[in-house]
Image (tube, rainbow, N blue to C red; front, top):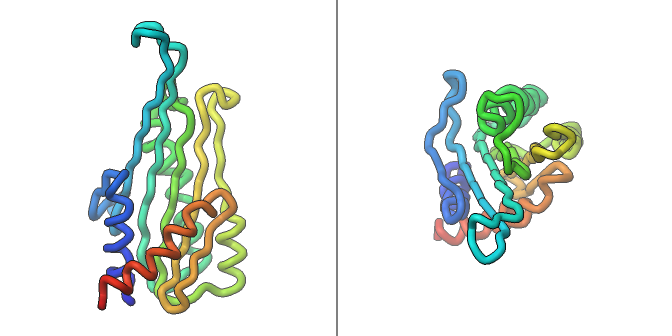
Length: 180
């Protein structure tokens, strides 16, 4: 199975709830895709004007397709989260996110042809970026990383990204079924 086959099936799954932009360029570098999800929830009494509370939840997913994962790739992923996803996508260039912001998940999805080395497995599991805004009154942002390897059909995540692992594992079977 190629990374393109895997990505196509993955985009189909994400497109049910995410807006997918293909391809997506950041600072002149092109990535296969970017996905955006937004949810607004509010609680009010009888009429909307009597709003008790509301919250906005976001998720941003950036897909990266490479032949082999190395330390340089994880450094690039961390830089993308820290220097682009958090300030541009989450805060929109402001000091803090807009009022009502509850959380933003920033996911870097690595689709890799070759298996990961033991050092890379450890580095993916230790990948961490979290930021609170005004003592979390304006919410928080958190980086997830998911790495799917094509040759050995394995999925690696950091601790906070573990909920995505099942979907990525199931995607191997779904992509194979499509190829038949």
